[in-house]
Length: 45
Figure 1 (cartoon, helix red, strand yellow):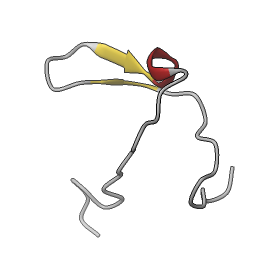
Figure 2 (tube, rainbow, N blue to C red; figure 1 turned 180 degrees about the vertical axis):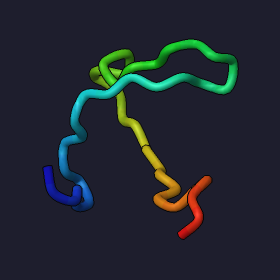
Figure 3 (spheres, rainbow, N blue to C red; figure 1 turned 45 degrees about the vertical axis):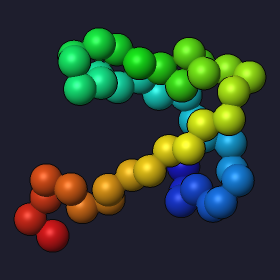
């Protein structure tokens, strides 16, 4: 998959929240969601 552009539909994913609970994008189906990524967080670059 290439880079996402503004307003592209995000692929399905599941991550852990700050409390260690799994959260999936599908959990927010039908709601507006703002997702912000830190592309270089926790990397040497």
